[in-house]
Length: 168
Image 1 (tube, one colour):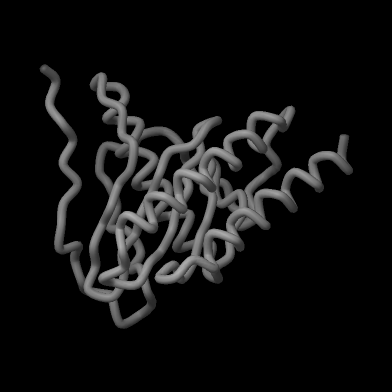
Image 2: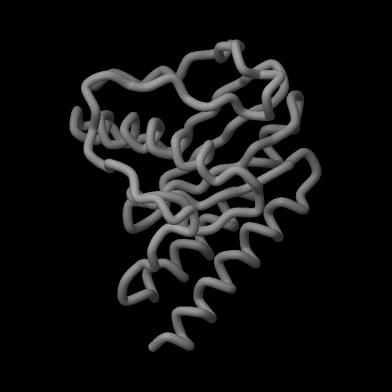
């Protein structure tokens, strides 16, 4: 079973790396409720914190009867695109500003399907690669997420807010 899980994890890393080669995508990661499952980026702590915040958004929307297909957050120096995939995981892509959204959406759709097939083939998910489990329960107060794109983004706020559709 260990050899099979290693092959499955290698497959996930390959899928993230392939997605990262698309024009405009600078980094990718797969976040599970307990932390980062796989990544092509450095600083897994920041990815873990960002993933936790947006996983809480997705879970909160689901609890209210909404299904979130994708979240786009625009920052001055990056676009963060998050898409829920199977087994409670989020696929994240950090992109350059002004990237072609249709190309990103198409790439994410194809990659998400392959990631879901791989995740669903796993008996259990391996522990997070960042080595630090996080509280996966919704929190009353959402902490300020780590800046996307480095220290120069430290005090920048998102330019666009995520709007969930209303029922009806």
